[in-house]
Image (cartoon, rainbow, N blue to C red; front, top):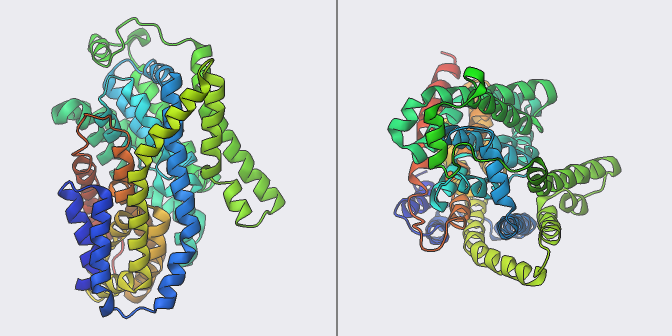
Length: 492
C-alpha cells in the first residue's frame, strides 16, 4: 500500500510545487515505473491495456484541441465579447455575474459537452466582466462541479456497471451528496474575485445559487433520469441567480450593484447587446448542442456500433465542425488568415495540455493494471469500519490521477463496492461517495490544470491555479468523510 501511494503523491507534490503539469505527470509515471517490480504485473496485460487506451486518448486529445480552437474562433470573431455582455446584462453586479457563470453557465456547458470544454467556453464570458485571464481561468475551473453528469454521465454509467447498482439510482444518490461541493466551489469562485470578506458578505447569494443547482440536479435525476440531469439542474441554478440578481424594488439594481457593474467593465446604464447580436453569439453553442443531440439520436435509432457510433456522438467530431461553421459565418474577410492564426494559436496552447493528459492517462493505466489501485483499496479496507471515512479520499485520488470521472471509476468503483460488501455497508452509498469525490478532484488533476493554463494570456502569471480549487476540494472531501462516517455505519 505504501508503494502504491508513491506515484500519486509524487505527482501531487510536484503540482503543489508549481511544476508544469506535464512534468508532474512525468514524475509520477517515473515513480510508478520504479515501484512496478514490486507488483509483478503481466507485461502482456499491461501492454494490452495501453494499446486499448489509444482510442480514448485520441478522442480526449481531439476534444481538447477542438475546444481550444472554438475558443480561439470565438475570440477572433468577437462573439465571446457579445456573449459576455449579454450574460452580464442578466445580473446587475459582478458578484452575481460570477456566480451565474460558476454555478450556472459553466456546469451547463460541462454537462452538455464534458471533458473540460465547459471551462474553455466559460472563460471568455468571464473576461467580459473585467476579470484578468488568470482569474477567468480560475473561476472557470471552479465551475467544473457537474462532472458526474458531464457529457451525459458516462463516468457514472461506468461506476454503476462495475459496482452492479442501478444507473439512475446512483445518479440520484450522487446528487444528494453534492451540496457541500457546490457551496465550497461557489464561495471559492467569489472569493477569488471579491476577496474572502467580499465572499462572506455575499454568503446568502452563494447559498441560494448552490441550493438552486443542488435541487435542480437532484430533482432532474428523479424526474428525467441521470443523463440530462446536469444540464437541467444547471439551467435551474442559472435561473435562480438571474431571479436573485434582479430582485428588488421595481426590479432595479441597487447603487452598490451599479458600482460593482462599473468595476466589471459595464458602466451603469450601458446598453446590453441587441437581441439579434446576442442570438448570433449563442449560435455556436446551439450548433454544438444540436449536433451532439442529433448525433446521439441517430446512433440510438440506427444502433450504429462502435467505433463509428462512438465517434459520431463524440464532441471530438463536432467541436471542430462548430468552430469551422462559426469562423465561416462570423468573418466577412480574411477568413484564411484568421483560420490559420486560430489553428496555430490553438496548437501552441494545446500541446502542453496534450502532453500532460497523455502522461496522466498512462499513469492511471499503470496503477490500475499493475494492481496498485487494488492494493490501495484492499489496504484501506483492512482498516475496518474506519474505512468509510477514507472512501471519499480514495475516490478523489482516482479523479486527481486520471483527470476523468470515467477513468477514476474504472480504477476504484469495483474495489469500493467490494470493500462495502466486506464491511457490510450499503454498496450504493459507498459508490455514490466514490463517484462524487472522483468527479470533484478532476478539477485539480493534471489535464485540467494544463487546460486552464492555456486560457491565461502570455505575460500574465499562470501560477496559483491549483491552490484555491484544491482548498475547496479538500474542504468538501472532509465534509463527505464526516457524512460517510455518519451514514455508512458498519454493523456492530
